[in-house]
Image 1 (tube, helix red, strand yellow):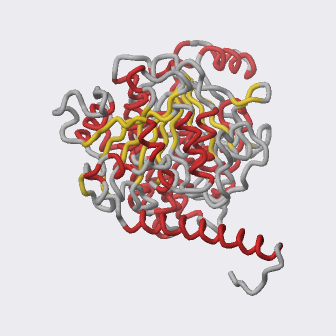
Image 2: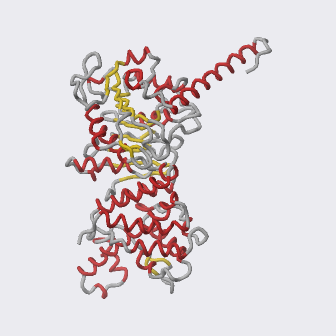
Image 3: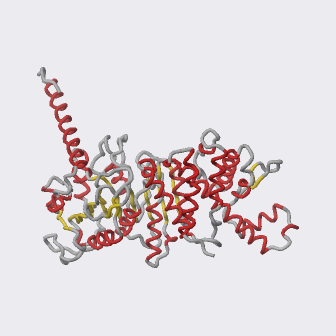
Length: 523
């Protein structure tokens, strides 16, 4: 009987819930995902092993080396090795093998040894996949709790292609990601972008078969997976995409790799490192180029600004916030022929002055910004501020009717209330995508006034934006959005920016006065 999505999700959550006596919900993922992926690998390996035995009568007459050669050549796509080989403790590093020992002392040590053995035996696929595994220590997770989690997870149906589809398996993984984020707020939510926001960005950028997709802050890999899923849903071949991501946190990068494997997406590359400081996707000393780039980078991140870096078009983003530095990196990574990028950022990037204003001017002068889409507040797990999607196109690749201007769309009031946050519905997403594809007349107004199902949208010439000091605040161009955007978070952001500029100007004035021998002024 086919395994239902609900069945596997319920049983996996039952396993996760065994951790409630040992750790906060925010930490469940560090234990559940490695165990779940280990079970998936083991179930898959054992399923293929049984097919190997059924197809090869007399295999017992072969030497261990001969049998292994045939099995790994024709049946297995990865290795589940032995731990403590050629000793009395020799044991296959598989889920079922270790599960049989759960009543014995040292369970955590055997689990850790098994996962490390799998990483070592499959360096091209699983290197550093399972993270530091501190949870396997008896001091962190007792044998009794770890055994209870494994026993509960073992009640989940066999996780292999003969028993459940990758759609079900990947859906279960996504379910856990979302549930951990829903229940634990900031810590788990920081690497999980709400899937409706991901879907909207992917719908706007429309990845095509055989294109390359890149997420420079990939978190759990949701944007890469959504790109393949959208292509598949439209009759394309999601597996033809080249999927690439970089993530600063090694453990989270492991979550992304497992997520991609669970979705049967094996043509991917996920690197670990700080994208701004140490971009890992380079070729001959320059950044690799991609067709589609999408990201939800950490907001207003303090960073060490570049000294000399070709990515810094228009200047260098201030130390206090790396928002525009991430944008500059994405722009530099766009392929020359059809590169396009979509990024989610707080509204401050639209209007803050100083160095950020200079970068905005350069981006507008080069006609790289195609659209600004205002989103509702409280969509994310780790912040309730309103955000916007900025869409960029490689130089000279905008459609003729979109050149020399920026499309503004206000979707700030399009949401449904959920338990802990607001969500975009399927209708909201469809309406924004429709508005994105609207046609506009010479005055920037919609040719079809009924299009977009009530969403306010306007195409604004770059010359008009320049008269406003290159301010991209949506309320300047869509008047009905002006009052809505005067929320507390935006006002505080604007105040802090203005205050910093004033302090900078005062300090400069005091320096000039002191140099002229004029004293008595105090900052």
